[in-house]
Image: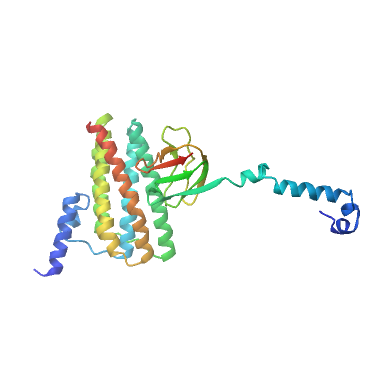
Length: 124
Length: 181
């Protein structure tokens, strides 16, 4: 637990004290544009719903690599399987969701309901 | 003949053309069902298809037939689960009726026919029956059960079931086509 009394009154804030250096480092990390933690927060997220035995939207345009969340709103189990089986979700019960980072255009479908099909188009 | 009788006659004709599954009531007129009777029809119609799937999983070695049958078991069980939950919530007791009896009678005959077949003949008979059965059930849900359901939650559940049945029909038709080609 942080000792606030020490931070306020003690060596922490004096010239050359550890607090000055820690604050400087934190400020630099927060402002520096190439810091990795800022990169991860930039990842785009989009959603596809499984609703009335359809993927909605059935074609989703993504502006670069995007994490796509699939949400099962139906009362039956679905899955999301890449057309060549390069990747697949587990079976998703009603109300469940699953996500995957998509970095290239692909077709997909539900193996349990093969008439349910979708397309993810990634603009590079 | 008054308008009401004409409408009933038209319903009867439409159902008769659709399938023999609901033959016993279709020959007369559109059945007038209460909500407890509708829940009974809904649960029975789902259970009948689960029973057909059980026969398919026992007899078929065809991968697409087995995948379809597993989906039928899973999906129709989900629908029954939803219906049972709703029945409990609404304190409704499903009530046996002429449509339910007709479904059960037809199931006995169809199961006998399916059990007598083997190999590719079984696969073809099973999937053709699935096509006809889903056409008949879609027609009944769409044109009899949904319009007659009084309770809004029951009506909403039947409306949710409709796209499931329509997908099953398309899936069954796709498989049936592979047997004809």
